Length: 111
Length: 115
Figure (cartoon, helix red, strand yellow):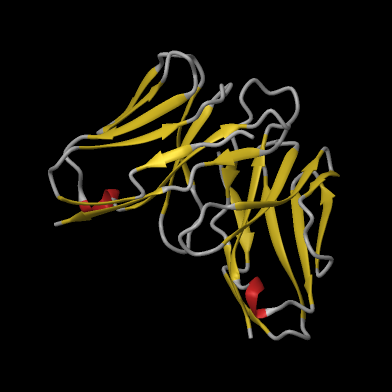
């Protein structure tokens, strides 16, 4: 069974701090996605990583895909209150059309 | 344009009502999905349509009935729901079979409350 384990589950930090969220698996994924979701809204796609070792930057967010394509990380520099939300990693399942979701990391950034 | 739209935004219904949720995308995607999401949990897959045909039904109770009238539209018909069905219902779409990476794009969701 393919699983994605996210850590930490919850993170509360002060504005301006840096943080890293991890998404780990024992399975290889052809790609991984990171989404951010606010309460009562749908997940918004942040990035898709495809190539092992790939690093993508989106303003203050840096995403990395592990060399073996089994893990990924999201690093936020100088977090802001607007970064508050649920961060979900997701990967393509071997069972076509089924996406595997991590349990999510709930981030709260205090002003 | 990577927009998936859903209506209504909020829905309150009694256990004897019949209602429908609607989803639309104009990205030319050929796969569309319904998910159910409870508070503080990741989305749970309910149904997948590929090229307008039902590909996956994750053992969803028959009180939920999906429909895909065409490649841009996806409906979820609701009948005789239970209070435990209250949740955020999400629609998503992706390019579908043959895509190198089948990234899903989500709509804003419908917040359903069953009384």
